[in-house]
Image (cartoon, rainbow, N blue to C red):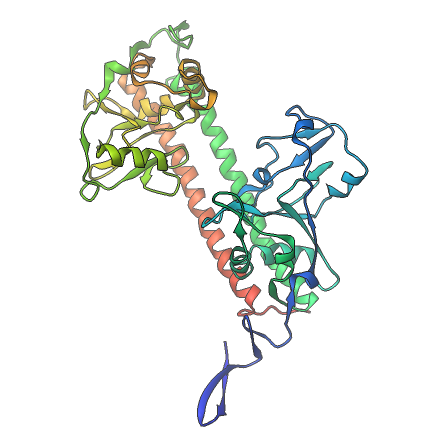
Length: 445
């Protein structure tokens, strides 16, 4: 940013050329500070009666906060439908291009304030604790979306969050209207939105490619790991295992307990053995906010954690049926909650990667669900004794290695694209910061 120097009371004051100082910082001279009430028309959601909602598809779908989690419109998450609405409720029908945002979350966490755009969906209803933003004559609707996702706006958005019940945080419509923002002239808004939309297209295309690669890997999983497709292209018919899984006649069967046994080592020294957690998406990772707090407190009272070593397999008994199982790839032992089950290989020569991939197939997910025990659906768990008795297909070691090689290659392709996605998302985030604060200007023809 080019600067000139002015003199005031004998002291040098650096003033950016072409910029002015405002209550929210330096902005270009052509920009204005406006309250959100001038920039948008806001509509709070309606409290549709939950006792009239149904999970089966009907004429109208009620869009809830869970449907805009992480800033994406995901209508498949816990859908709720209404067959009919009143004339009063028609005001809350969303249309293409509408921007909606979640207003309620957890105190101290940024698990709300997610903004999403309505595309070509029809008969969607704006539920309570969401709001709809519509641009006024001084603002552009496409620019508005990026403004709502900017770090400057979100800073003030979370500042005005007030407590609800318990640890709940709420942001009100009237408070949002009073947030002050820097607004460029309309042509510059449109140009900024146009530039950022090209990044969004690149991000969307990369996300679609990653999804395609993951779907291809899912197909490879069941086909290769269960022998539906042979690496050598040959098979002499199939036989059914005790669990109802069809495998090639040439393959043997074993149980989990034939190749793995429980690791019983514990420790209370989390300085020597750092605390790790198990998540469905990332596997074994350093302790995060996702770590089950109740488990930690219980383990602290018991003064012990389970130890995990390289090539161990661990799983969450309650979430195994959703994919909470992973192989440890670590240089040194770590601690995990005593709630987890930890297994070590009995034989150092087994192909652990074949088995961990097998444990993650959809076929075995269904088996876990079938053998899970519990009086409440959400608290069902797969006990270690039952897991160790599970029957597994056991192809020749050469075929295990060949299958693992194919799946590893597929994983590398996915990780390469995920790394590229993170890179362009970070670049877009930096560009947004510069464009929406005026640090970087765009040429408007």
